[in-house]
Length: 188
Image 1 (cartoon, helix red, strand yellow):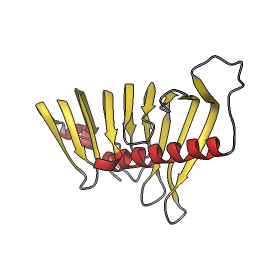
Image 2 (cartoon, helix red, strand yellow):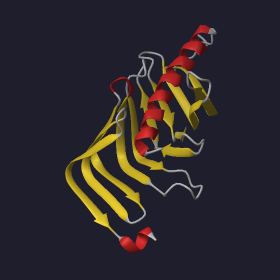
Image 3 (cartoon, helix red, strand yellow):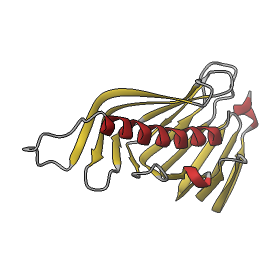
Image 4 (cartoon, helix red, strand yellow):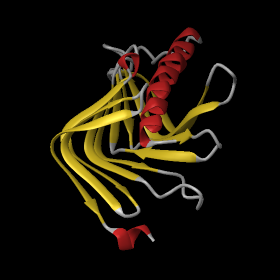
C-alpha cells in the first residue's frame, strides 16, 4: 500500500468520525446546561476503529484528545495517529500535531509535523512522507499541500514545494521546485 492509500484511509476515518459523532448525538449525550464551553463533547485517550463495507478494518484512530465544537459541529483532534492497513494487514502510520475535521467529513486538515510511514515489518521498503500540513478532501479523492514535502525510499529522495495526490488513481505530483536524488548506496 502506498502513502496515497494511507491518505485514502484518512478520508475513510473522517467519515467514521462523522458517523461516530451522529451516533453519540443520537444517544442523547449532551453537555450539562451550566457548562459554558464551546464543545458538546470531548473524548480523552481513545481509539476508534472504522470498518469497511465488508467488516474489515479500514482505519484506526488513536489520540489523547478530540473535541467537537457545538456551534459548527467540527472536530479538533490532538496528536492523532491514524493506522491504515494495507492489503496484507500491515499498518501504515499517519501522524500530525493536530487534525481538524469538517462537520460533514468532506474536509480534513492535518497540521504540524505531518508524518506518514510504511509498515516496519521488513517486507515493505521503508517509505516516509513528511510535510507541515496536508488537506484531504475525501469526496473528491484529493490530498494537497502548498508546503514543502519530502518523500523517501531506500536510495531515493523526492522533494518539492506544493503537492497534490489523486487518491483514487494513486497518482501524485509536486507543484514546484521538484527534485529527486538517487543514492544507490542507501538502497542496499
